[in-house]
Length: 258
Image (spheres, rainbow, N blue to C red):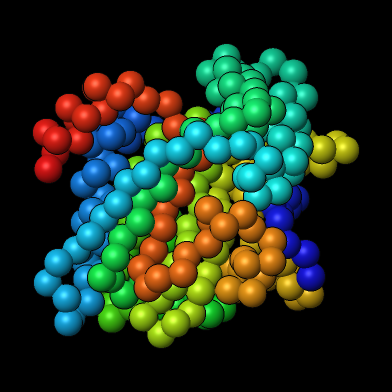
């Protein structure tokens, strides 16, 4: 069993140098973020609560606090080893690598309260009734009508990635049943390491003996993660890594959406 960013071999024919799932959110990324994140939290409001609380916290943290950042850098370096990269992909990847090699990085942490959290993290990969799996693994799967739902995890879940200069987001939850889970998703590009092609989408997760991926539980999170990434109250955190923003423009855009 191993815990960290899982760099897995790819069987996809051809190389992928753009992430289409986040591109649609780039033009109005702050507006999309506000709408999608708050809507998901509203959908998860507990039945005995009438008030949703959403906290947005922007921090400059040391890059050595990012879980297993060395393996993200390794994956990015594998992309940069490809000759004749498209300019857009090369620019993004060089900038992302530079962010992780700097001393500090800007992180946006969005936390909700009075919600059910994200349920289903204990279920197996691919379980269609798990809101956690719909959020972390699936594309275009909305669990909105499920009793386990935490909002719509169709295309809207990609909005946070549009704000990340690394296309990287961590999720943490303590759900209404007291189950804790933590996992990361990075939507990068084709990478080659030791002449072997890697999947562009990688996960910070626990890899079990049968090769499946699982989120970190409470004990694993407390032991391995910086306290900044741990969730202790019922609800969920969306943690966006490598955020670039203009303070005054951001306030104007957010207030215009509320």
